[in-house]
Structures are given as structure tokens and as C-alpha cells.
Amino acid sequence: MEDTTGHPRNAQGHRAWWVAAVAGLAIVVAGAFSTMPGILQGPLHREFHWSRGSIGLAASVNMVLYGVTAPFAAALMDRFGIRRVVVAALSAVAGGALLTTVMNASWQFTLFWGFLVGLGTGSLAMTFGATVTNRWFVQRRGLVTGMLSSGSVLGQLVFLPALSWTIDHYDWRPALITLALVALATAPLVRLTLRDHPADLGQRPYGSDAFVPKPPPVTGAARRTVTVLRDSARTRPFWLLAALFAICGASTNGIMWTHFAPAAHDHGMPVTTASTLLAVIGVFNVAGTIGSGWLTDRVDARRLLAVFFTLRGVLLVTLPLLMAATVNPPMMVFVVVFGLLDLATVPPVIALCRQFHGADSAIVFGWTNAAHQVGAALAALLGGVARDAFGSYDFVWVLLGAACAAAALLALVIQRPSAPRSTELRDTPVPSTADCATGR
Image (cartoon, rainbow, N blue to C red):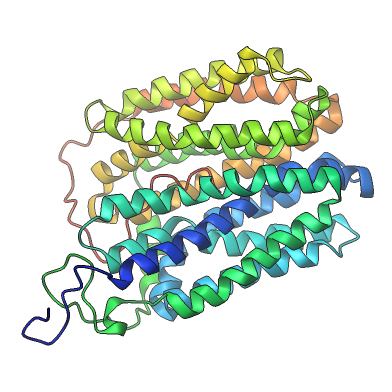
């Protein structure tokens, strides 16, 4: 059926679902890259005799670039188009992984994995899925956002155990080559299937009653991103949210996803087993995020954050007591509960950004997520340095547990805005609620 302008209604077989599927595949692949440093530490240390701190530096640079790239990713897509940016990002992560296999110095690991892979995964994270959803869907936006949000976690579930097995039975290089080939194979699918806008195909957005013309390239989006940062940085709530979200990144991506597998291996646990535990954490990430979103609609977001950080702090402090060569019941309890809490902080933080910053909340959350990644980077570096200095990670677990207690207090210090700002959305993608992991 067509409307009076000749544009099909597309109730069935809409191209939007193919676009969402390919976008989800790209996010899944990027998610696999995000957690690789954790299973590369042991092999790189044994082969090159690099310190854990040197290896952690590359992971730190990767996390910083992942976070800093996210606020600008939408501007790049508005300027150059989604398809071009995604193909370039997949090429960057594949190139970084392949170059890593021929490195012979730690600075090269920082350059190839830290910079190249960091830029690529950052472009495939925060704003990518949201941009696709906002352009291609009017109906089912919540469903599509949830599906794309889980892509990064799904990448960990699909690839992490298999890559760990490859490293244990063969070498770390075949694992990276395999991952690079997957990224390179995804790029042609993106090139053939992904389109920047429904208007490119003469279609309406899925569920729309009207045809939406393709907007012209935006040249000032990056400037607005910086302007929003400047304005929000003048407010107290922005810095409180940034501080507690930095602690969130340090206590999840920075320490758990980078150092949990090496720490468990120090106690005799095979890396493959430790990686499987991380995958289980990823499974419960999804349930925890959905549950947190449901609670955020009903409970004060500040109180939720205080509870979540308190529980996470208790878990981290007790973790050294649970480490063993085999998986015991207390460790499984830790994995399940930590998985539920891992991404649970994201919906309350997004809600608070919306309350304080209204129409600019998407960009503000992007910058808040950059603080999350900076905290993750510092923890990744600190974990490696502490392991070199003390021979274990126990000090770091306890320190970050205490930091979570501080984050709980910061959440309670945040005051409600006297008059909520307008939440009318501009043409800026709303961030998905699961990109906090992936790095993630």
C-alpha cells in the first residue's frame, strides 16, 4: 500500500529490521573486542615478559578512547553517514587486532590495541545503536533499543569462551586473527545492507504515518557536543554524576572485565573457566538492566544508586575470600549478584541526566559515560601495577569496594532539580542503557 505521495507504508518486510540486524551484528563484534585484554594478559606476560602495568596501560588507553569517542560518534555519523563510519570502525578494530599479532614491544600494543581498537569500538558503542533506532523506527523503538543494547553483552557471551579456548589450546595470535576476520567479514554486510536513512530507499521509518525526508549533513554537531559539555560542567549535579559513574567504570569494566580472569588464574583457575564466569555475569547483566529500568520508573533514582553501589562494594571486598582453583557455590552467588548489579546503575544515571539536563540529556550522558571509561582506564592500570607490586589483586578489590561506598554517599548528596527541565528531544540520539559494560 502507498500513501498519496507514493511512499509505501511498509507494514511487513520493512528494511528497518534488516538494518537493525546488521547494526546488532556490528555491535556484537565490537563487544567481543572490548573484553579481550582480560584473557590476553597471561599469554602476553609469559611470551614478552611485560609487566601487568604495561599491559594494563594499553587497556586503559583503549577504555579512554572508547569513552571519549562516544560523544562525538553521532556527530561523525551526521556528517559522513552511518554506513561509512561503521565500515571504518570495523576496519579499525580488525586492523588493530591484526597489527597486534606482529608486535614485539609494549608501546606497539598500546598503539594498536589501545588507539586503533579503542577508536573503532567507541564508534560502535553509545550512539550507534541509538542513531539507527531513532532514524529507522517510530514504533518498536523500545524493543529495538533493548535488542541493540544487549549486543555488546552478547558479543562477550558468544566470543569470550571460544577465544579463551583457542588461546588455551593453540595461541593468542589465532584468537586475534579469528576475531579480525569476523570484523572484516561483517564490513561487506554493513556496506550492502546498512543505509543512513529510510529516505535513501524511498521508505518511511517503521511505524511512521508520514514520509521523513533525509536531513542534510550536519556540520555543527561536534561543536554542540562541546558546548553542552561546557554548560553542564558549570553545574554541581554533573560532577557528582560523573564522579560516581567514574567509580562505576572502575569497579566494573576497569577491574572485573580486565583483571578478573588473571586474578582467578593466580588462584589456579583455568582462564577458560574464568572467562565463562564473566560470560555468566553478562547473562545476568541483561536481567539486571531491565529490572533496574523498571525500578527507576518507580523509585527515587538516587536511592537506587546508593543501594546498588553499597551492594557492589560489599561484593568486591569479599571477592578475595572466594577465589579458588574451582568454581564453588559462593563464587556462583557472587557472579549472579554482581551480574545483576553490573549495569543496574545505568538507568538511574540516565534518568538523573534527563531530570537535570532535559533536551541535552543524551549528550550529557555521553560525557558522563566518558567519565565512566576514564575511571575504568585508571582501574585497569592500577590493577596491573598493584599485581606487579604486591603479587596479588587483593588490595585493588578492597580499595574499589571502599570507592563504591563513597559513590553511594555521592548519590545521596545529589539534590533534585527545583524545576525539571524540558525533556523534549532534539535530533540527538538517546543513548542505550547497556553500553556501560562494553565497553563496553
